[in-house]
Amino acid sequence: MVVVFYFLLIRPQQTRQRKWQQMLNDLKVGDRITTTGGIRGVIFAIKDDAYQLRIPPDNLRIEVVKSAIASVTQQDEVK
Image 1 (tube, one colour):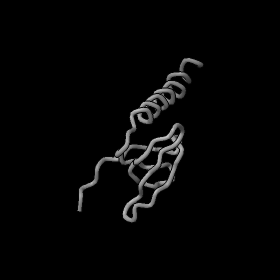
Image 2 (cartoon, helix red, strand yellow):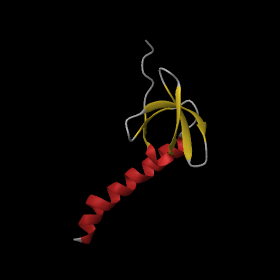
Image 3 (cartoon, rainbow, N blue to C red):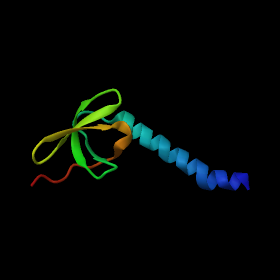
Image 4 (cartoon, rainbow, N blue to C red):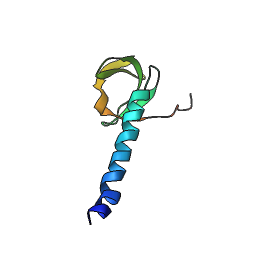
């Protein structure tokens, strides 16, 4: 029973956690990201525990903690 729970619940969660941590480690200035709150922006500065984002179209600048990063978004077509 424990083995079944391990392969169905614990191991997939560990794999997702490792991929997310690797994604955070690979972020660099200029990457487009989406936060867990749905804010999309471009990284313009990296601190120890936070990223500073530039939010278009008004170039609003905000700072978010690393744990708030949900994903790296692909470059949208320039209009």
